[in-house]
Length: 404
Ligand code: TRP
Ligand code: SF4
Image (cartoon, rainbow, N blue to C red; front, side):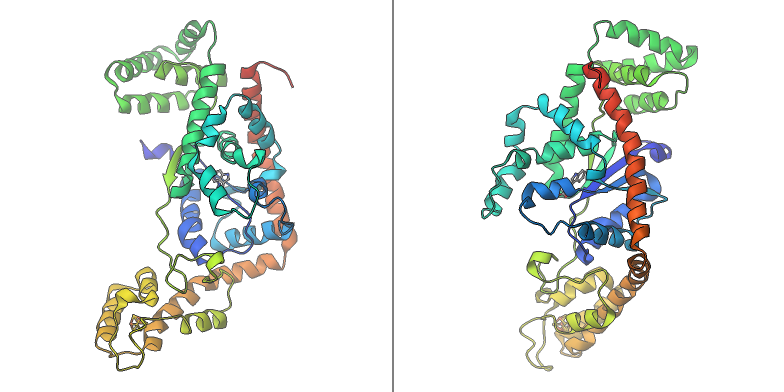
């Protein structure tokens, strides 16, 4: 796909409000968001309704939790001038779209999403045989389709939700995008593009439909995207006509798989709040140092003179994230020959983590001192998101042909 168009491409992603974030979130998700905001039109939101599907009895979902997480986003470099930052529940249109989509979503599709049974089994102590929990991925579909997203950066565990989203979009377009005079209207729309573009469109369409030429499809879509003279409705028709079906009202998004985070926790397991092995983004330097100095190493190194093996040491995994080749050579050499002590070995990691966190701590501090500003950023982002959401809902309601 041609990259020069990426400015027009949309990215949507959400995160449940967990309060303060840690380095696992940063290396796993947020760093990726920070990169994406420069190349795409990004919508990043706090999925507070999704949190309710599993934590409906838990009163800890306070506004503080939401603000704290957003402060960490901002501290990590998500910028309200590059991305729309918003709160799901402040855009109630998501609930309306969820409801409308629920009317045409077969129950079996939701029951078959792997996370449904998996999470129920994992969180056995909770009663998750709820209507809301079954609908979790459909609410997510509404979040995504609402912004007509091209890409959704998610982890492996969420891929099935994007697959469902695509199926729901396809079904919606199939049911509500069929017009009795579709073909004639599409032909009229082609004519409105002018002779040259109309001819190009027809050729690309033919190449795609007769030879399955995917590149022709890409080029034709780009051509449509750039048309100024035709209405949104006509564009939807022509996108649909390209693929030969019906109007495309809700485009299918693609998952952008976030590489599994290599960020290990203090015990070598994946960094996660539930394992108690985290370093928070706002952790103080002294605390970072203390945590790293006391983290376990290769158990074979009881005394300084005992050689060790980096492959058996969680500290080594941190070197893999933070250290350059020469430092890593120094570690391997020194560890295997008992030439360095574990505290020496940890020192470069301690410095790297503290340096990485320093600018984030500084920025977070500014926002902590001005929480009103944080609330404004969320409120403004939510207003901007609502404008886009209303447009999509208007299209959806129009297609379903009932007035609001
Ligand atoms: N389900 C996602 C998670 O647990 C959070 C989420 C909600 C989301 N809505 C979304 C992610 C829309 C991407 C797009 O991580
Ligand atoms: Fe781990 Fe480094 Fe100690 Fe070797 S020297 S056991 S890699 S901390």
